[in-house]
Image (cartoon, rainbow, N blue to C red):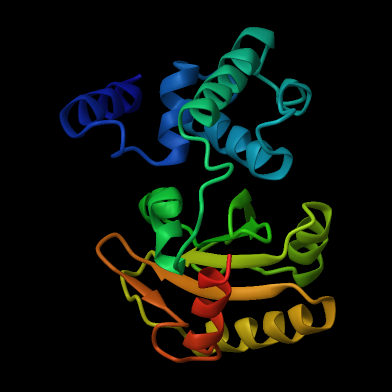
Length: 226
């Protein structure tokens, strides 16, 4: 109860952009159960949402002990309202940085999240998905999952983005190596990767802008020709 009140107080003081995703779910749920704390229950909900997405999450949520129909529908309704109000469908990406306002929320997380935005031939956003959420500060990236979703969306291009909870915006050797592998896979499939952006709370790093792995001219030409 004390933790919930603290989240309420800090949210009222700092605004709704302050809480993490987990804490937003805590505010929606209100209470935990005798066997499961509010935070633990929220963590389970986040795991389900990340996997199932917001389109059809009610049934998976009902499988969580402590989540009944009322709470499941409350969560689904909040997600749907957010989707309607802040929908990115059809937003045109003229340069990779245009994506940042729509993914900035991950900078509030203590874990590393890797997102993939799929775009159509006009560089309009089709979907933004959470590909993985790391157990600590490293996210496991599945090229198969990324590109199977891109193919399903009939995407012409993708943009990658992940956060560095450490606050260091520069790519690690692992970041560079992972991006190389994804680029190699994209060439085989014919799906262009426009950029890989690393976000921190106060800054960002663009692979394309810094000339790492991406050719700036190629990426910008694609945007200017549509």
